[in-house]
Length: 215
Image (tube, rainbow, N blue to C red; front, side, top):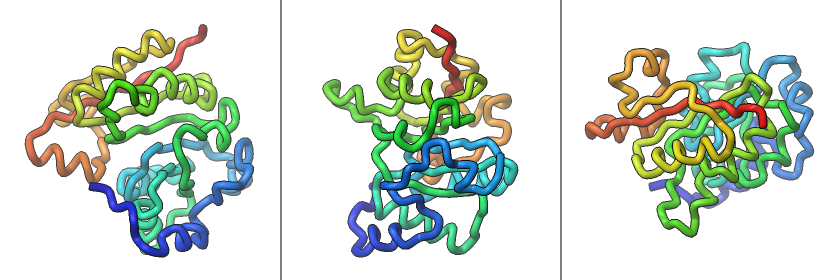
């Protein structure tokens, strides 16, 4: 279960040098924020930051932005950053629905979604981060050669995501229904906290890599 109510978490986030204030006009300004011309990749639902920070450490030539809506969870990621500062990582505390306020058209090279909230009730389908509504948003911010990577242990959510690709005009590049036993797709895989927990119980991990095509 995610931690959501740590007293003072919002204040700590607001004072952190690693967090971009929600009110900042940062769309189109990420080169200025990072101070370089490196590509920008984002993770939506970054949680405690393990995946993003390991990825950033392995790829210093890429800038990473972690997006998380829960202050108490994001605080954990910030604390990790304070222990091991990485110049190519920044965070935003925000709702994913507002993603286009923070990134300009064609500004992002890759989107990562890891173990997203499944929103199991049908009336909440549009809130799922792999829904057509969200795929339409990602299409705008991705570069022409950009793509999206999605991992989950939730079969229903994964099947839903697969079903959404065609009507949203995206194509599947790679797909697996058992990531950790797929030699090709598991090469270089970085596990999240959730992934390690679920896979240790024997749960298969599902993953796809998709990209939008011209319409």
